Image (cartoon, rainbow, N blue to C red; front, side, top):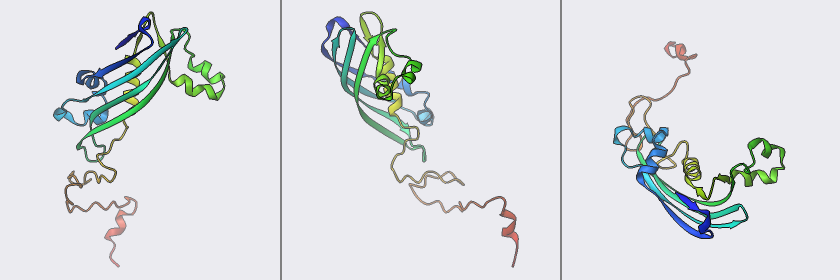
Amino acid sequence: MKVPLKELPGHWSFNLDVDYVDSLVAELPMRAALGSDAGEAGSGTAELDFYKEGEMVFARGELSASVELACSRCLERLDYKFSESLTLTYLPEGQVPSEEEDEEGDEDQSSEVEDTYAYEGEEINLEPMLRERLLLAIPYAPLCKDDCLGLCTACGANLNDSECGCDRKVIDPRLAALKNIKV
């Protein structure tokens, strides 16, 4: 996924195929929770318009993807879809401000530096940026629905399907001895 500088300005479309997305999300806990039943991880697209001013390259566009994950409460399979607008700046390697330089600068520039990436030679490698954006877009604890009830803490039944009837009342262990007292 590379863009040659000599072909700028221009529009590029990139398909994030199943193998690419699978290699990125394979180690995520909510992907690994699917276990052996995990099918294809998902796919996506990146549509970007590039233009160049001097050595600086600017890109605007959108990253859209669909990733199969496990719900963090009930472990059911869910298809998480997202679409993110991208506004990027690419500078030659060595000209990208480091984190230390960013801390010394004023706060208005810090948001711009977050979307600044380096390029080397006569082409821009989009893979590091796409990997970063895709992983950051996936929630830490995805839910199949906002009101997901999760699993029963006693028997492990999915409470979204039916109530299991287990007594899930949690008694503070410091007060547990009091339940045996007869008055």
